[in-house]
Amino acid sequence: MYEDNRIIRNAQALTTDFIPSRIFSRDGQLQAMRDDMRPLLKGLSPRHSFLFGKPGTGKTCMARYVAEELAQHTSSVAPVYINCWESTSRFKVLYTILQRMGYVLSVHRKGTPTDELMDILRKKLEEKQAVIILDEVDQLEDDKILYDLISLPKTCLILISNNETAFADVDQRVRSRLAAADHVEFPEYKTDEIMGILKDRIEWGLLPAVIKNAQVEMIAETAGGDARVAIDILRIVAESAENQDLEKIPDKLIESSLPQAQVARKDENLTRLNPYQRAIVDILTRNGRTDSGTLFRELQGIARKQKLEPIVDRTFRKYMDKMLRYKMVESEGSGRWRTYRLI
Ligand SMILES: Nc1ncnc2c1ncn2[C@@H]1O[C@H](COP(=O)(O)OP(=O)(O)OP(=O)(O)O)[C@@H](O)[C@H]1O
Ligand SMILES: [Mg+2]
Image (cartoon, rainbow, N blue to C red; front, side, top):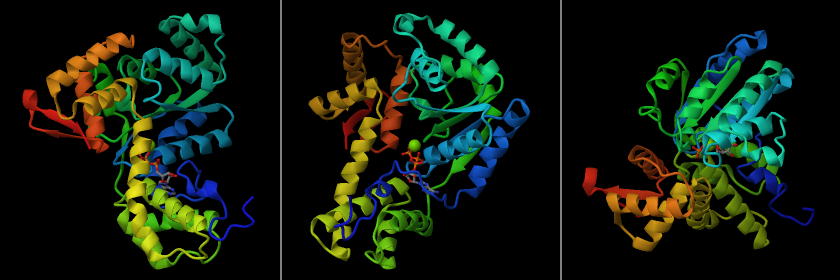
């Protein structure tokens, strides 16, 4: 398929979905997570872990990696990955977990009450243990599901968030259990660490000698500690060199690809919003800068029309906080004078 290519050997290796063949500079975090899960192998209760850190620091990648690693080691553990921005409700989370564990709910059972799903899951867990990854756990609508899951026997939870204080507002019972979870920090990558990650992708994804070491360093420096941005820049640069029929990547292409990489990051962030945050983006697109009270009121109006559950002010603030962390919106002022605008 790529025989006429001059730059790209394997386009898939240049995407952020590609599973890297080697993991760089996260030995401490991987080991901590392995130790937390290990009791599962003896049929004992494991320790839950909570991974936190800025965007593009490898949280999702490492969680999936260790869960898969354990599942390959023993068939008695099912690895379950949940995007909480896709599955925001208690019902949807339970439904998805059961589905991933191979339990098929027939269509007429879609109206199954949530508590019944919980009973089915408990039964299922008597046959098979699970490592359940709740990615972007702060996107959940309802904390009750955390309480349900955290109390399950022989289940290891891996919770992921950009926000170390994601659980400050949750129910006291959940909070005290979460306090006992292993808090694993993912610091921003340094330039040489990003270079290591990029070199692996280059080895798989590009033809030999099309990019210079100094250029890899340039990309790594520009990425600002975010591995996803670095991989996006590499892909965009390689694609545009390939499209221009070049044999090597010129320096100027790296500089000119940065704005495109930022757009790619923005688009990818948009896909991760829950329905409420998508409505918030619509309101801010329409209104421009909007004060917090008006935004909240208009959001409730849209939620009603879309037959979404109304949310409380605390949840609204949590969702806004997420968008601020991802630099999708910016705010000015505080308290009731606070205003928001899209970036
Ligand atoms: N240590 C690493 N070794 C190899 N590849 C890595 C490493 N860290 C991250 N990556 C790659 O970088 C990209 C971003 O990583 P990942 O999606 O895990 O970040 P994240 O911390 O979950 O970010 P976000 O908070 O935006 O979800 C992925 O394609 C991943 O495969
Ligand atoms: Mg992630």
